[in-house]
Amino acid sequence: MKILAFAGSNSTTSINKELVNYAAAQLTAHEVKVVDLNDYEMPIYSPERQAAGFPQQAVDFHQEIKDADGLIISLAEHNGNFSVALKNILDWVSRIEMPYLKDKKILLLATSPGGYGGGNVLEVGLKTFVHFASGEVVASSTFPSFYDNFKEGTIVNEELKASIDEKIKAFENALVAVEA
Image (cartoon, rainbow, N blue to C red; front, side, top):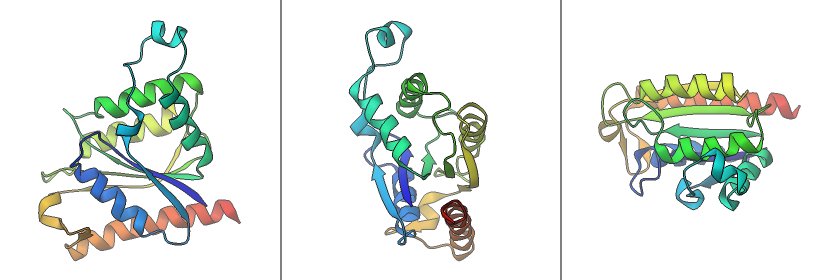
């Protein structure tokens, strides 16, 4: 199965990129492509800009989604919502095709330095990706206190590791069920 993985952040030091890389690395039986939102930077969406045509980056990101059987997304929380970088990409992609996540299995994660672990943005993500974009979030989780629980590319809190690994396995099982 083909999996597209990305962090909902354009920060070059994103902790969500670290978490999404961890999750992607656990899926060795699948073809996983990790992309960086910085490679899809484009003008802020507006109807007038859309009338002039779609930026190539929007077309390319849309194609990445279409080519994938499943997605792993780790959301960065900016003032309780998506980062502007992700929101802009989703605005453009939704104009190319709506619903843009139809029939896609999704593992949805969020992390932050604090104890809530991106819980606010995870709620926004669940609403957006399921209700508006018609994706199927088969597993989701927050990851609290990132700097205390994640070191050198791995989860050091055993309880949290078991929980995240369980979510990854549920996602993988959903993909295998589709393949069968």
